[in-house]
Amino acid sequence: MKLHDVRVYPSKAMLPRDAQLAWRIAAVAADPVAVPAETAEMIINRVIDNAAVAIAAINRAPPTTAREMALGHPRRGGATLFGVQTRRRVSPEWAAWANGTAVRELDMHDTFLAADYSHPGDNIPPILAVAQSMGRNGRDLLRGLATGYEIQIDLVRAICLHEHKIDHIAHLCPAQAAGIGTLLHLPAETIFQAVQQAVHVSFTTRQSRKGEISSWKAFAPAHAGKLAVEAVDRAMRGEGAPSPIYEGEDSVIAWMLDGPKAHYQVPLPEPGEPKRAILDSYTKEHSAEYQSQALIDLAFRMRARIPDLAQVERIVLHTSHHTHYVIGTGAGDPQKLDPKASRETLDHSIMYIFAVALEDGAWHHVASYAPERAARPATVALWHKIETREDPEWTRRYHSRDPRELAFGARVEVFLKDGSVIEDALAVANAHPLGARPFGRADYIRKFHTLTEGIVSPREASRFLEVAQGLPSLSAEELHLLNIALPAGALVRGKPGIF
Image (cartoon, rainbow, N blue to C red):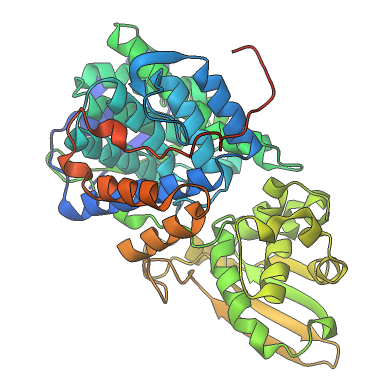
């Protein structure tokens, strides 16, 4: 990996293209390097993971809305839609929209956390949709997905967005555009313009993840995917983009991020260096925001040591800056303590999540968020006794570049009414690569069966798993088989709109 210095330049500096971050991203995307076997195997795992969480959410409101919008844009030989019979195809940007929304709805797919946050599995829907529409094969798809993961994760390692209240899709959209460029074997010049367009149109605020979190949280990454497909399409037709998109004196770094004095060092693979970033990411075992994963596992472990939850006086979670200020009491969001809050809000309330995990000793992507579950008096009482506090050591470990030190958990103190204190800590979730039970292929398949049971037929589930595990050898004619259809009549209909 090579570190690239990125800062703001005045227009009169005439920054050469090969010194611009967007060009360097394009060069990585255009590099015909082979995909390592371990990268390919993990891509297959994440294709399975994405399909599982998408099907589990398929009849919830946002995926239903997005799907019906997409069905208003049919295209012969286009892309498939999760849940829909394979013979029905739509334009790729609308498949990216619908499938991306389904994947993100439950917030249960993969994650990477560093200087910023990301769900790099959001790269899969748009790149797959373009692959299906443009007649690419499984090997092309692997190369495109390896690039998407690489670029997003490398940007997340180096450039913090959330500090400036910019949503993390600003790193996702250029990664998706770069991945599509790799998939289609486009020249660096074309990818360069597409990446710059993608950056320009995808900078949005984090209000989508603040206060009363609405359904837009599921749509936002899908919108980035749609924008990325459109950006590549325009670039392929010869259209240009604002440039330099990162370093310009009126561009995103100067006015939306660290400002004119900004200095970042972005790691990117050198020419000929394989793309392995996906191996540093991790999936979710539980349907909750990633910083909740270790705390759910910790709650399961601690509950046996608490004889009576009614005797709890208060609970303090000593944790990182992010956990405290984004999903903890440091956010200052009263909605995070509201039993009538939306599922999206409860998913971002570690107080609620820890309380339910303590009570139930289990976590379910539907039952744990049910309104009647959230409104249970004993739960509300326990929930409101929980607070978070930032601990500098947990924040340091959260941002560590040493994978052995990285931590996304907390130290928990449970104060009982008799004056005793029960304490425990957990740095990473059990499913994390360094956790007690790292996820492997069998775990991804088990998660798939758990989430799709009763929604798709066993025959369809088995068919999909067989196809997905043979992804590298799929021909262009077979790539549409990377889809899962529900039985006839099983998909719900949404409210009518324009499309």
